[in-house]
Image (cartoon, rainbow, N blue to C red; front, side, top):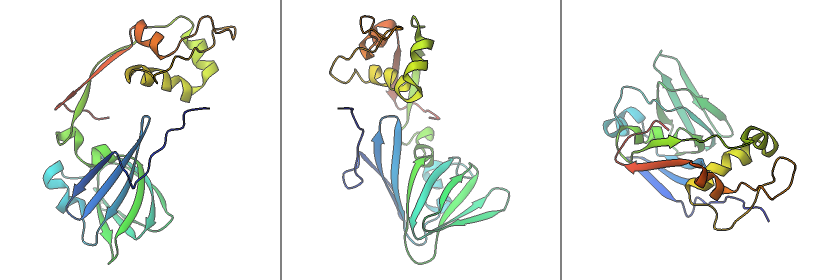
Length: 201
């Protein structure tokens, strides 16, 4: 059976809180999904900016509003408002705020780390070194596996593998030249993360 990443907002991996706003984060492989609840009166420039810094929020937000309303004021003076069932892609350079007298509940899958100020040192980490070694027939293998499975290989190698060995088919479909996560690690794929440094991930 295939490994299916799964999480639940009732048991998040991490919770980020600022005055009048709370975000519960769930990690699914290389994707971070957040359940964001902003209270009436919340505004990024008032409640987040003092800790995050900068004149405008520099995160790109992609998500959907479940209930309540969120307002956006852009650096050029234009505004936008989103309500229940609206899906959004908000570019960097904005201020966000809760509209009305009820909390705004939304799910986001892009922009959460930058929004919380991680690149400015609140909970920063940096990818210090990344070395890729060309693997024999790696282009052909990537083409057969597809983007999602190909991206998964180095991620599993960096995490130490899945705990079980699984060979991937060689160029002709045989398994005698399997290239699992351990093979990538041995081939020289390396990365290190260090707390306290910054990353614009």
